[in-house]
Image 1 (spheres, helix red, strand yellow):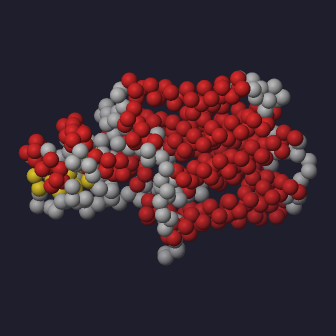
Image 2 (cartoon, helix red, strand yellow; image 1 turned 90 degrees about the vertical axis):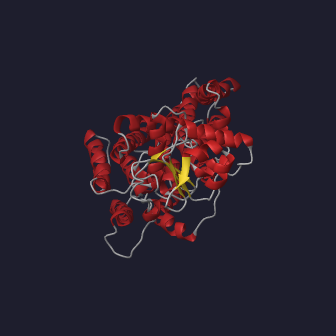
Length: 468
């Protein structure tokens, strides 16, 4: 298969697109399950489309620009998984083409081929959760463009004000996915080590990276929502949870082969002495990228493969060199074929389960399943006091309390006058038709707020309250 991508003619570009789509189409054309994370993003989009403000009126820890994208999709398409998949596919194709263009136009390797794009396409299809429009996917597009700017600066002896452009890209990526902020450190180190950047250039880069963030902070300040921004986004950024053994095996199935080839590609760099000085620096840039990417792990709430999308540029670079370094093309073809077939098998087995009893992933844990609710609670505005376990799948969210880990700030402080006022105002602004009390909070809440007690009564179903 590699021989088809040995040059960069337009035919190879068409082949790249066809290869990428051929992997995804069987999944897209099937009855693809809705992920829990997708449902959360859709609920955020729905609340934003009602005119509510993120963080102040919607307690969710999604980054600002991601929320705006989900709002736009809800306005245009409603709660449509197909819209998320089509948008993700378009962004994925852009990343494949741009990474391939970057490797060739910036001479990352001694020869120009479409193999980097081919490898990136495989990596971007390792898992079903990579098929959707995640904040990590959107942020990675801008991080790739930042790599392009830094590579251009390294290639030229003089330093221009293009560092402002790189800073803007990283700033925008951060507004899509907060952990992308670690790449400020990467850009700073690359300027120190590999360019003739002066203090002035560092200040320009700092201003470029901070400008998008300052604009967002100003908007929230003018809307009296700075405290909400801090509570929802920054104070919950680090999410170190215990790792379950059941999560580790699926993660290794997805990532081990790719990571192993990347490490092998990195080691193969030391056996080749025809790299230019610039190409050697690019290798170091990618190594630093991988190291800085590892710091994003502390911001992850689980080991879902889509959370590792920011690793892709570095891994794709080293895996590409692994295949390009072979003198024996037949051996390279054989290893790539095994790699591709293994990756495709893990993906399709996880999605379709055509071999009963064999689990290559943990997709069933990521899928949104409808909760067992009475038939009367369907298509209603509801509030779930506790972790969402599918209650919102066939219903709509009411009040700002989408994310329970944030909502406990109010509901576990019912002796606080400020929390009681918050809850009452939020119920007034967007009253739910039903309240599903999974934490046993509602009795105390109704005692603390008599007006709500007049409006909500227990139903015949346990722990479910209905608006009168």
